[in-house]
Image (cartoon, rainbow, N blue to C red; front, side):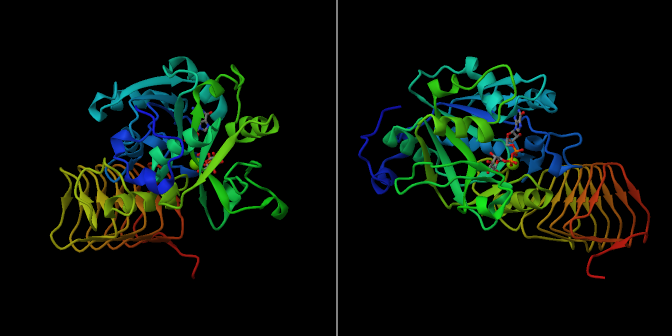
Length: 383
Ligand code: GDD
Ligand code: MG
């Protein structure tokens, strides 16, 4: 990829054809986390493999990386590592060369990056993209690579602003965008010094990856970034307020999938046209059922007569019986939702069975294969 003059401004960059803007040719995807907050969705499926808008979530990230010029991706796997390769193979279906490296014991985010270094082909000074495996974003990845090159940083980080930063890594910067501190998951009000957070997408200069200690667990957020700052390394932040969502909780996951279906969240990998709903081939939806709000119905799922499904994901082989109402919820694979049952902001695990005339709301999670009989439960914190 040809370099662009270092003096280019953001507006000048925007006018340069995409193919001529700088790209990172290699990426590391961190997909080894246990996804604890997403249980029961992650009991049988690692977080990046849960379908969002009809395909495993990771597909969207891989397709976006490919569109930004990435050619070679190393997946750093750990939890349920065996399910990735059978699905994505060598990556050729996505135009990528994919490799897999599995940690027997989880090495943490920094350890995972260090552990795949031997699979990278980039020269010491070249940029390598690193992505958290649960981020849905419209980030202009090439703009982050350009910022990295233009500022001569060791590491560049995409930063976004959120109302409540407590669940994230806080990243204050100076007037030039240079990172001044890194505060992971702040515990006290005094630590909340900014609303800028680490958005989970980095560009590392290849040689910097070799400075991460090897053979033991290392957190990039709690150890690598603070240590590099302490030794005077140049960490650059790029605040970009485009669409951004960490899909680490059930409600965020459901919303992310709906935003992909409606087109609010960009991805070249949505299997169909953007709109109010997406029904995958092999699903059956009754003519008078109403689908809205970015609902996705997977192959083999059945939506009965008069049912209303809004902003929800219904996974493969699930059944929503007539006149049920499913809102902002996720219905797991092969799960069964009885007639007239109401679900609002609920996650139903794979294979669970909920009988007719129940009402579940407000973040209830029904475990995989659990059984709730007809009219047995009315759960609402309003009552
Ligand atoms: N290979 C591997 N090994 N991957 C891991 C490991 C590990 O031991 N631990 C976590 N990961 C992966 C997860 O699968 C996920 O894709 C990514 O690393 C980040 O882990 P999360 O568990 O999702 O972290 P978080 O959401 O609490 O916080 C991180 O992301 C925030 C943005 O969403 C941090 O990077 C925060 O600083 C950041 O603000
Ligand atoms: Mg996360």
